[in-house]
Image (cartoon, rainbow, N blue to C red; front, side, top):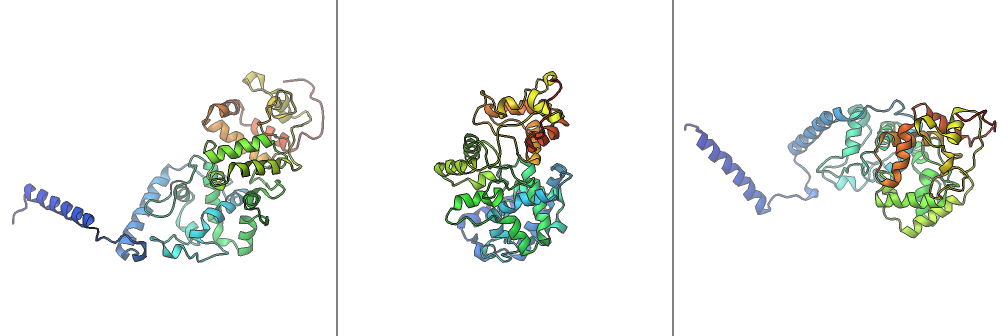
Length: 354
């Protein structure tokens, strides 16, 4: 039989109609209990691998400190809360739920050898369609994505004790809301080591406003939006009041003759950068909803200013600090962060305002 264009179109139309008829009939079993045929599973996984490798080319380069202890620590609690029930952990290597999913979530022991950091970042940031792997809640948060990548790269070598130390905070009997916070920030609000901000002594108004912003999604964070997702407003206020009442951060700093202190107390007039102390210090004009900085972790402050310098503000209220951060020279960020981390100790009056 001679194959003409007309006959080819008829064959293609027949195949399409047959496919539609089969789909309409409902005889295709979409139940997860049936699993995939081997050829289907191979084809889907092959397509997924190729897609990840292609789109990973558009991911940013990993940070120089990707595998730092702080980065690994930063993602540990979130992994236990949001990922371990599917992918397992050194404490629970065979989750019951994962065995009944199609496709089954992969174990991660060999993942670092299989995926490059940028490929890992692609999967963490965007998830995988037709599986249980979601996209990151706040995909614009490169720092959080890279922290999870760092944790996943370290996970295969972790002992159960190492994992417990990183992923679990101290037990908080009969207070599940506080236990969520303590997992990362500690019961005393001072857990940091460069991984998390210090909460102890922070302004209650600032903590309430920040927790509320996370809950409403107006301040993006794949970790914090997940952590406060189902916490009632009254509990957010209670948690803010608890951490604000602990000894820790303050709004008082002493001037000293260092670049960071000069910026904190006098700003950079030639760059139209106001003094940090005018909003964050002990000033009559200080808005109580502005954060206290004296005693805060230097790594956190530097990372926050860097993000503000790079990212677009999400609302008018955040616009002021984003504008100020954009005007700060790169070398000023660690100087200011270091000054506040030391609480401005060692008072030496500056000789003159810059």
